[in-house]
Image 1 (cartoon, rainbow over the protein chains, first blue to last red):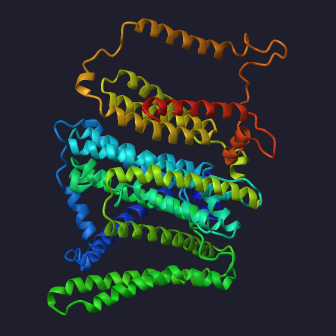
Image 2 (cartoon, chains in turn cyan, yellow; image 1 turned 180 degrees about the vertical axis):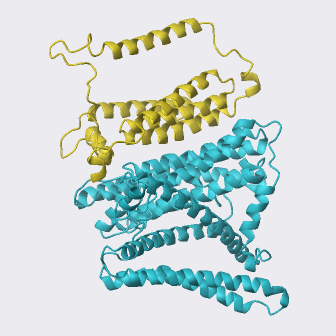
Image 3 (cartoon, chains in turn brown, red; image 1 turned 135 degrees about the horizontal axis):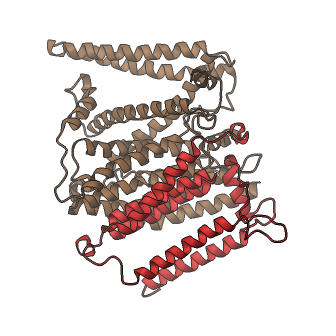
Length: 430
Length: 193
C-alpha cells in the first residue's frame, strides 16, 4: 500500500496509465471535491455578478457580502421537504437526477488538468467525453417524462431536440480541431486529451490561431454549441420560466432539485474544459516555447500566488470599507479572517514557487510545476464560466424556431465548411 | 507510445468485471421485453447498450466502446425516448404484448442459441480447418494495442501511407447504403422536393 503510494510520486504518467489505483482514487476524490467547491463558488459569483449587471446588490445578509449564502442555500435545500408527485413514475423520477449527475461527473476522468494531473489518459479521450456528456440529456428527458405533468414534458422534449441538433455542429467543430493535431512531425492525429495539448505545444500554436480564421470559426461554433448543450441562457428553452414555469425540473424540490443544479454546473465546467483543451492550449502557460527561459518559468510560477494575493487585497479593502457601525462588527471580523486565509494561501503558493524554482526534479519543483498546470487550466475555464454568466445577463432567450434555424441552417453548414477547408489546407500545407 | 501499457500490464479484476457487465446486459435485455411501460423498456435498453460498451472495453476495443456510447446510448436512444414519450402509456399497457406466433419466436431463438453453443463447442474439433488442422477459434486472441487503437482502426478503414486499407471498400459501401437510407427517409417525408 505504502509502496503503491510512493512509487507514483516520481512518475510523469497519469495514475490511470501508470495503473496505480490508489492514486487514481485520490485524484477522483480531489476532482470531486474540487468541482463541488467550484460549483459552490460559481453559485455565489453568479448571483453577485447577475445582481451587479442589473444594478442590484445581490446577497448581502448571510456573511460579509453574502459569502456564506451558498452554504445557507445548500442547508435549506437539504432540509426542504422532498416531494414526489402522486402521479409520477416513482422509480424513474428518483433515478433521473442521478443519470444527469453521473454523466457530468464521469467526464472528469479524462479532463487533463496537467500532463499527469488527470485520472486517466484514454486513447479515445475526446470521444469518451462527447459520448458520456451526451448521456446527460437522458436525465433531463426522463425527468420531464416521469413528472407526468405538462410543463416538464414540453421542457424535456425541447431540450432533447435542442441537444441532438447542436451536438452535430459541436462534433464537426471538434473534428476540425482533431484534424489539426495530425499536423506534427509524426503525422498521426490523436483523440487523447493529453496528446491534443501536447500537439499544440509541438506546433507552437494554440489551435484557436491555427490556419488563422479556420481555428477561430471552429472555436466560435463550439463556444455557441456548448451553451446550447448545457441548457444555459440564451438557449435555456428547456427551463424557460416565462413559458414553462421551470421546465423539466418543475416538479422537483429539495435535494433532488439541487442535484440537477449540481449536474448542470458540473457539465458547464466539463464543456469549458473541452474548449480549453482543444483550442486554448490546455494546461500550458502563455508562450511556453517563446519565453522558455528558467527566469520566465519562475515569473509565470508566481502567478498563482499573486492571484490569491490580489483576492486577499480585495477582501482587505472590503474589510476597511465596512461601515463603522457596531452592527457590522462580526461581519468585519469574518471578512478579515477570510482575507487572512486568502493571504495565507497566497504566501504558501509563493513559498512553493520560490522553493521549486530550480529546474531539477526535486519534489518541490514537481509540485510547483503541477500547481502551475492546474492554475492555468482552471484560469482558462474560469474565463468561460464568467462568460456563461455574462451571456445570461446580456441576451434574451431565443424562440424555439429561431434556435432550430440557427442550429441546422447556420451552424451546421458553417462547421461542415470549416471541416472541409481545414482538411484541404492541412493537406496543402503538408 | 505508452510504456506502462505496452509492457503488458495485467488488467485488474477482469473476470469479475466481465460477469458483472454480462449479467447486467442479460438482465436488462430481459427487462426490455418484459416491461409493460415503453419508457422503462427504453431505459433498460440503454443499460444493455452501456454494459455492452463496457464489454468492448474489456476486449481492448476502446474506440468501438466509445462509438457504442456516442451513437447508440447517446444519439439513437434519445431519439427513441423522444418518440416513446409521446405514446399513450395507459392504452399501450393494456394491449397484448406478445402476438400469437410467440412459440415460433421462442423456437427460433432456441435454435440460434443452439447454433452458437455448438459453434463454440465444436469449433475446436469438428469445424477445424481440414488442411491445416487449425481450430475455428484461435487460442491466442490477437489484440490491438490500447494506446494506439484509434490510429490502427483508421489504418484499416482508410488505409495508410498511400495503400488502401483492409476494409476501405466495405466501409465505403456501407456508408453509401446509409446515404441511400437517409435520402429515402427525406423523400418519404417531403411531399414536394
